[in-house]
Length: 181
Image (cartoon, rainbow, N blue to C red; front, top):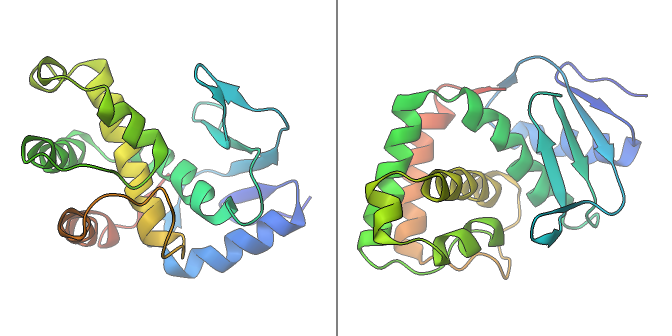
């Protein structure tokens, strides 16, 4: 099984794809994460492209090769979110709260969009679990939009204005510090 400093791969094609993505990402550091393929992945809503198992330090994939870069970056950023720290997480929450209050529609991935569609004003005001899960998924979908190399996708429905604000936030908050996973 091929090994990189941060990732342990089951499949050589995944290793090649990840190695092609890494130069476009801020530097990644942390204990190794296992990258594996598991057919039939699902969650409480049905079939899933992938799942990040943070405590086990592994990511399981059940997606097509063309979708792999976008899904990989999304799942990688679950590890980043975990280690980001409360001030940076709250800063991202503030950003997406301003979008929500401005009536911004759409998102940068389905995992954030369906959660956004189910939010209520009390969720945001109380920082409910539903709100915090949305913020995490929005963060990960934004990272996938920025760093996967996928320029256009049917799930990229957030307007250009709000995309640009997120790009600036990531540049200031994430790119300068690197990715601690």
